[in-house]
Length: 436
Image (cartoon, rainbow, N blue to C red; front, side):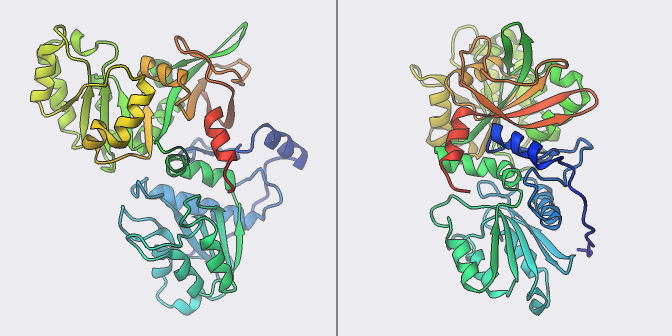
């Protein structure tokens, strides 16, 4: 990789007083230009940090590490997609990202690109996540980092995995390398959220889209609707970006759900059609057969979740005959409970090949509202109405009930839309319960 010189850039976050006021609202607010999917391509500057005491150089290179991870496109799932860069005297020596599951980790990729290991002495390693300290499919990265003679190891967040947490740092420090943790903490945490949530909550991270509809009694959310998202170019691009990055997409059976572009990267666990509203029964047999053929061409596992009955029997036969797996949801379980258990160790896990890290519920108002009512949604991606308050305190949905207070961690301003990202109360509590 070509060398890159760094010229210090002035922080554009405003005064320390402003930063402290923003941070007081949430422990997890990210700087402008960042979000759950990494660096948001909206034309905003993403070089600043709310933590004004950080050096501009550390912020710059940690952002470069995040961008390096983003280029790998989540290919490492269920491992975290880590980004790492090596810098010496302000010049980029190498960069690396975690390879597909079973392959090398980011730190090893970056280090092994440097042919003369002696050059690494006195350099700084920037990595988005604490170097691993245990043997898995790869040797421990912490041991390799410790052997390289780095002057500094700058890390975004600590790994909560009990086999790593703090142990990786200790091994690197024992070699005489200075360890700095917390540079772009919130931003790297947001990037690694799909890896972190399953380890904190023992289930995949679940996120969904919503529309902010301010009224006389405060903001209310309509979950699952995509029509207004598609009417704004920024909303359309943002939605497509998340669909591209998630592990498993859950939606209703429809031709629009067969998104070839979103599946193009080939790292998906699959697509789940959950027919809660009887969409299949509204199709003709020919339409159902054609839909199955289109979905099969995606080349990814696909399951249809539907209760069989006289109204959809012929359509079910057409879909199953087209190579789509039919899964009957267990009666008596709420949607949230069944989805979580089936993805973890039930019929959906058999289809998708294991538990995904990130489940995105898209264009499915009934399911999104039901999950929200059960406090099972972790992140809400909100298209905010222009001229509204811009704050969503008591998150509601029609027909869902209150899911508690949520905290906006990001606000993305574009020419034709404002998008907010919110951590729900359950997720915020889980994150606060862990040292980062």
